[in-house]
Length: 70
Image (spheres, rainbow, N blue to C red):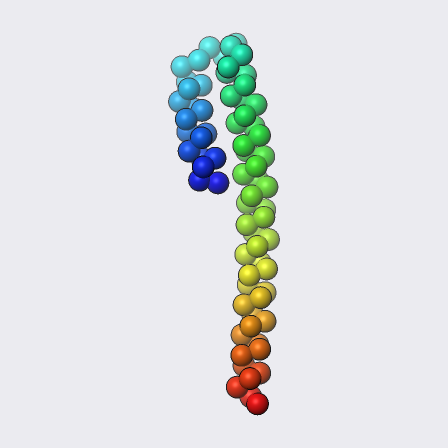
């Protein structure tokens, strides 16, 4: 996501000086849109992975506690 953010900053700077009717500007808009879709997908994946991590940590904690009881 950091790489996409850096790339988007570069695109924004370039877009600021381009004619909105130019082909390059339209290409940047499409690229920006694809990157936003990627960011949304990555954020969802990150949320899913954090949830999985939390569940697995809880399972490990329960296992360790069960060892102490033995």
